[in-house]
Amino acid sequence: AKRIFSGIQPTGVPHLGNYLGAMRQWKRLQDEAPQGTKLFFSIVDLHAITMPQDAPVLRQRSREMMASLLAIGLDPAKSTIFYQSSVPAHSELKWILDCTASVGYLNRMTQWKSKLAGDNNALRISDDTIEKKLKMGLFGYPVLQAADILIHRATHVPVGDDQRQHLEFARECATNFNHAYPGGNLVAPETMITRSPRVMSLTNPHKKMSKSSPNHRSRILITSDEDEIRNRVRGAVTDSHNAVTYDPEERPGVANLLDLLSQCDPEAREPEEWARHLDAENANLGDLKKAAGDAVVRELAGVRERYLDFLNRKGGRWVKEIEEEGAEAARESAAETMRMVREVVGFDQ
Ligand code: ATP
Ligand code: MG
Image (cartoon, rainbow, N blue to C red; front, top):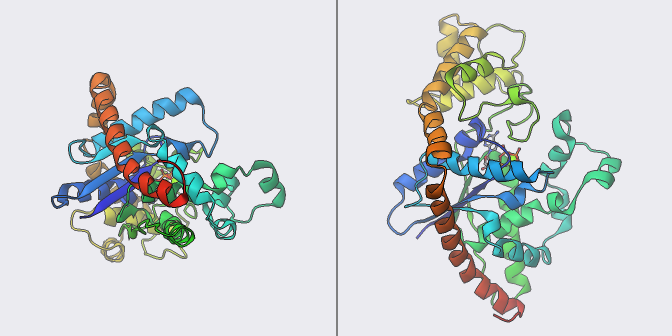
């Protein structure tokens, strides 16, 4: 049977990129899962501390992430939803994988580079910055991600396009481990990149939309109200050619809006088709923004209300129970893998 694992960092309320690239897919997988499928969705707080965090804020954001996942329709009766730090075995396996993971491979990954560069774009980053700012945790982030996946014996890992490199690396970690330790049988997962393209920042269409960008105007939160959604879309950076064409290379800002329109279209018409349609009506960029704003508002209808409901009215005991049950189920799943791991590495059980 399929075992599905995915994670999201409690680094802020999820945005449209998280939703279209990952969370919406999680809900679909959950709702369509055949009997016997196991689903694990983790709020990866251990990953969050690879960038500086403030303790009360991190705790609050973890709660908000739980409420967000419940608001988009993840159901604790069908999916195991848990905080990564409540399962210490994730960190234990991370260390063991560290001992067979290749630094050369990690060095070629792009995410730590773009996180260090912050909003200043550019994947080129000075030796001086690396020397002063690069921490082991951020550099080794993909190893922890591999541990997350492998510890739950995930067969399928649905993530957004930005995670393609990391999943390939997780497969490599499984292979390295199995080679190094006779009897090791970690399962390399299949990648399940969502059909959705990478959602780009609204203020810089060359960068992906992300929770940790300091610029609030760069993203649309899934908990925004209608006015805010429309405002953000209206403020999106496009270009000076006031007509609608789909050209991701030359016109990334415009293409991003057309992608959003396509993603939020109940009939799933392609962005090219939307561009032709709007162009045939002599639509300008203002019209495109209007249409994209409407589509996003429709797609996110109800999420904000359910989110506030979970966070406030049901925010006490009930969510606590979900948290405890999730942690328990995830610890059991992890313990099974760790028995094999400790055995083949040569540790006591
Ligand atoms: P952070 O900036 O803190 O890294 P993030 O926005 O990148 O936050 P993550 O928690 O790292 O979000 O990723 C959660 C999931 O959302 C992953 O599956 C990732 O692939 C997906 N995702 C993140 N950003 C985008 C995006 N811009 N477009 C599509 N999918 C995305
Ligand atoms: Mg990220």
